[in-house]
Length: 186
Length: 325
Image (cartoon, rainbow over all chains, first blue to last red; front, side, top):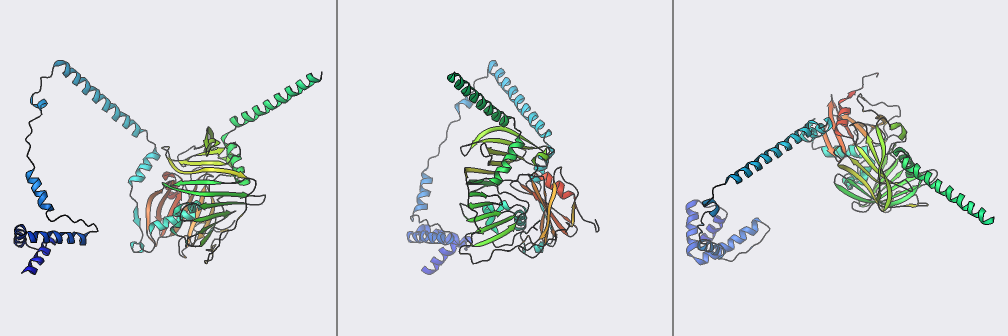
């Protein structure tokens, strides 16, 4: 019977019990302090097996947290006095608020017009550059060949053949044993 | 009488010295940027100098020791990495060797059109007036050395803006920056210290402890061979400077490779069989843009330190050479 209960706790932690069995185990744990301690140990073991971090809380850790939550007083705060007793807005404040709103609208409009002008005067090149960023390159060719030679390796090969300054980059180590591009002597 | 003669002699000497200084000064301030670039081109080839240089590319920083040895007959460039992966790169004329310390492996590569690890400088600077303007835009200190700031401003949208900081006394480049059209620096080469020497030794490629033979380069291209493709659209100033057919990848598959250049910027065009996956469209790696497309059974890629519009323009203008053309 004892072994059976241990197995039930283990299954409970592994989420392998149905609802009724789980409730039964929880009830027993709640009433028997020995089982509660066992549950805590199992929980710690379970946690260690599933992660690299080991935290061993005391047996009554969760119970203490529950107790603190239950003891936490409820606060029924009064409404903000400013909102409760709003004074009527006088004429001067209304004018000021209106002026501020108009100024804000003018400022936002000016900003949007400036931005539009900027985009209209953007050069073809800038648009092309923007388009380039937005465009996602497409894959062409036989997809079965993809594993044979990675795309990045191909570009690296081209870069290396294009400019010997690639050796000055720390990425020069990407292909130290490779044959490099050969150029005919003229 | 003697005193009077001495007085006039001193006066004459002072006037001569002052006027000479004035001429030198006016020569410098009035000199065109291209004259300073010409001086730099000569200095880079003929002087012996060494220092610490920092390459900033793709957001990565690489510090290296730099040596340039020169005599009447030859010159040698040498880079020694300060950080892993440790390597020594040596340029002797058109041959570049890279020795990896960790793997004890040496790669030997032939680069007939490149002359410097620091920057590309055209031989015919005076003939580039149609595509670039060269202006002295300021004077600054780099590595505690006074320098002219030369702006190399393209006259169209097909190449990047460059600035070169050139040391005032020896006309050696202290800093090179490539900018995009927003003024953002894409690549930088900066000396943190530089000194000119009377002489520096020419060194051989390091083979100490190496058990591997240097990777030999097979040359597959005949001198009279033509590229199987034609570049029909080229921005002004760009021209073909060489073509080769060689195994670019780590296999026997040959790849056609053409290099185009306007003097400062170079563009490579690659063509190979489309039996492997290629990524079509534009790609960007720092200042380098590439555009890939397919024509029939061929995959073509245009790549270079030029804006995206340039590689796209060249790629769109590519076509296969017709028999007999």
